[in-house]
Amino acid sequence: MDQLRLASAIGFDRTTISGVVDRLEAKGLMVRKISGTDRRAKPCFQLPRVDNC
Image (cartoon, rainbow, N blue to C red; front, side):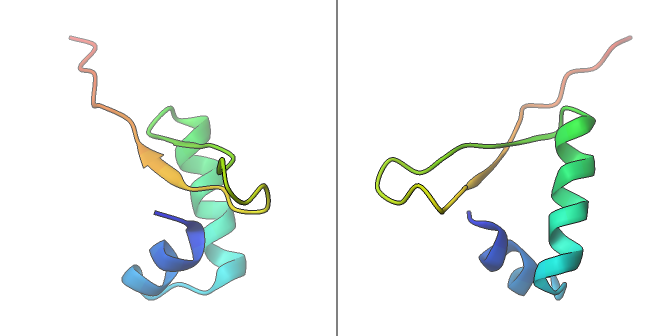
C-alpha cells in the first residue's frame, strides 16, 4: 500500500503520514520499497511481528 492510500485509509494527511511511516520504519514495524514500475512510488509493507521474550 502506498503512503497516500495509507493516509486516506486512516484519515491522516500526506505530511503527517510521512512522519508516522518514518517512525514505524525506525522501530522495524514497516518498510518502504521503491516500486519496480514507478520509481517515485514507495509502497509500504508491514513486517512480521517478532516477540523478544
